[in-house]
Image (cartoon, rainbow, N blue to C red; front, side, top):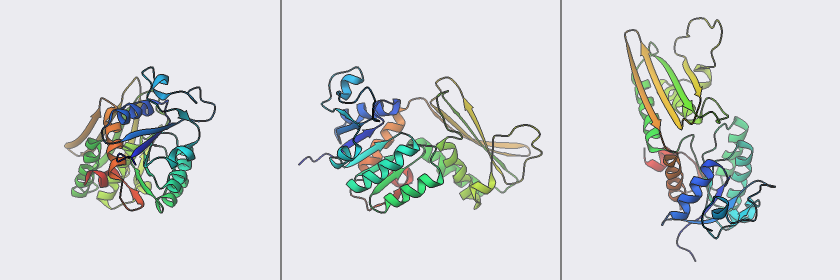
Length: 269
């Protein structure tokens, strides 16, 4: 019996997948037991280490998540919404901790994740970094302290390949601002302004998205009033911060009661 929890990485060939594989393989707190890719992927049946251009790791890439999860105590998943909800059900069957870093999840996806969380531990966050989660908490506190005379704007910047907007982190920050103000985000949210928009509605929470180059992730929360501004900012320069957070989350989840948790729980914030 292994003392170290066995971890499966889904979306093995992606940027985050490869970073996760390297970090888990090098960890003295966890073991890499399987790597999952979609059916027909050229990596299937090959050693994942060799696929990434390095030494063999003794783990073959598979397209059978059910079999992989059955051998694991944790699953780390930065894939796409449709895949993530399928993985959530399978991880729950295996009673494996499912760490979800996938963004772009819609209400129907979240409902299926909630259903899976009744049977297993799910840790889901739009951003796994300690710094961003501190920023979320600060945003809530500042929003709580300021009235609606202070306009709130969340500005985010990411690399040109990012497919969803606003980012999961921007939505976390907007939600924190809405929580601080005790309003519903979907009522206060304004994004994608274009054309003659008219004056800004009092109490609205605005979002702006920038896409370009290889920007890892930058988030500003701007509180703007007449004559003054408060700007809270987080800049990520290395994706390793998300990978470290995900590994911390999957280890934290071992032994927790079934439920849907966030990084605030993991970090004790």
